[in-house]
Length: 284
Image (tube, rainbow, N blue to C red; front, side, top):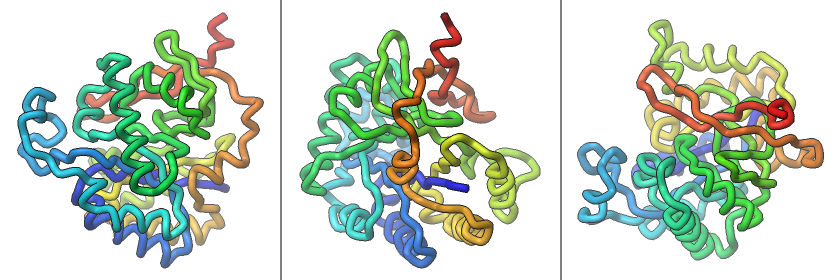
């Protein structure tokens, strides 16, 4: 059985505190993961954080994650982990991306690519949308940039996306499992037993294995102990814990079908996330 770890890094605190802690833990358990890094401005330190309107964000001074924490972020690749881009501006993407124009999306993606190339000395080969927030134009950008794959949505298996008439041949490797924070919204789940609920959710057979998303801000800090329990359980249960790139290598890309990308409720807080939906051939 296979499980891939998809780790989002979208704040200064995540880069400063979460990344080093995660790297130590992953090294201790000899596990590799895929990191999706946001390198642009961080507004999380302000009241309302990512919920600030764009007009207000533009008037506030912001510190750039990729500039302030270059060494922390470069250490991800040095340790042998997979690194790709998330959005350039985490706050802007998570709040506004679903409704933005092609020009806005293009600017976000190109800024992210340029910052990544400056930091790591080579362009990124995959994209992971923060919070599973997407825009049809994102899929066009990923196709144009010839990414090896992307991991932007929730779903059950690898597929090729189509949204609002935009079809892409860039494979999507979706997140298949709930996050720890989603599970913690359930009344019977606590930080003491959430690892058991997540592990139970893995006990099924999916075509490409499971994908678990965590964040440097949460699992790299407050929930680091929970993640360690999960690593122990997965490795003890003979799971192969690996990065998304290795999961991709075991997928027959020629057999992938196109699926519509829609929206589904993420949790009781009425958040919505992009989700793998109907196979297009079934619509004919």
